[in-house]
Image 1 (cartoon, rainbow, N blue to C red):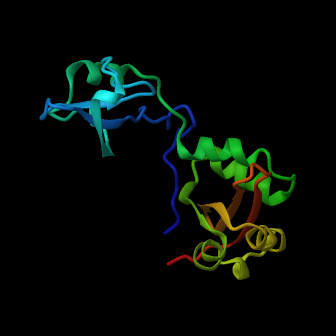
Image 2: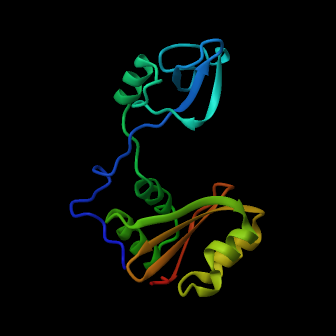
Length: 181
């Protein structure tokens, strides 16, 4: 089955709620706070807190009322498609790039977006040998870096691979046929 975005999908309708880390104030167990850049959203200094490895849930019973209000009032953030679209605009001109940009604007599924060891990502996730457009430059980028970023987008019969150099270089776009069930 091919994934089809909902009718009326757009970057604006797909924006996501802001996310914050969770913490607890030292010596005050049982109340979770949202962590911002300088401490909790309710104003407690970060040095008085212990961070958790999960995100703050404003709807949880144990969440701080003031942090909940601040988190719910925070501006929304771009969805994965919009964030990747912004990065792909810096890629070299070409049909695969243009098709990927159009697919992202329609809400194509960003199936994977990770960073890690280049050789492992190329072998297990990029499947460079199955790409039909842009395989050469993608393989060269994987071979030239120790670590790299990779995004995989699925759109109809296509599987797009975006190679995201961690040195800030221009992304590379490649594509090949999608494995359909």
